[in-house]
Image 1 (cartoon, one colour):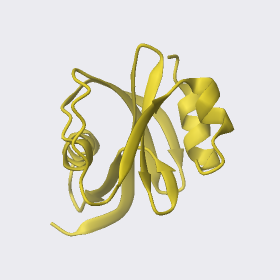
Image 2 (tube, one colour; image 1 turned 120 degrees about the vertical axis):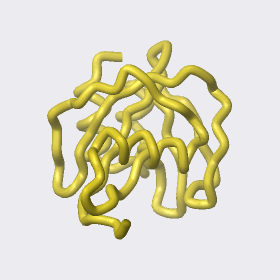
Image 3 (cartoon, helix red, strand yellow; image 1 turned 90 degrees about the vertical axis):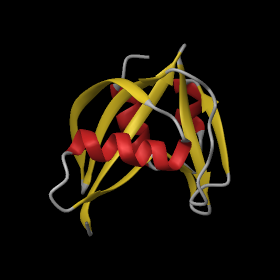
Image 4 (cartoon, helix red, strand yellow; image 1 turned 60 degrees about the vertical axis):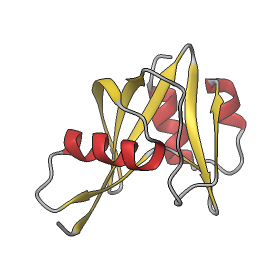
Amino acid sequence: GDDSVYSVKAILHRNGMVLLLQNDKGWDLPGGHMKNGENKIAALVREVFEETGLNISDIQDLNMQIGNKHFFTAQFLTDDVILSDEHHKYDFFDSQQCKSLNDLSDDYKQAIAACII
């Protein structure tokens, strides 16, 4: 299906660390556009797998929407990240480090801060 205007983003965390992906615009949360008519959870699982190669579990809706982005938190079982061509780097950051990243959007910082990690 065609992409909708809505996006789903995941704060993927384990052991107090959050996975961030880097593209030409800066640091990014895994996720992306929903397809028209697609369920948010299905879109999140699909997008995270496409961008990272990771399967996610324990998906929780943060009930937070900023603009056209809806935020979730989820767990992942392995650190075997395989990046798509949308991103060129990934790393794990604790919540303090996330706050100090200059090239991470304030919306993403707000969503990360809403998670108890």
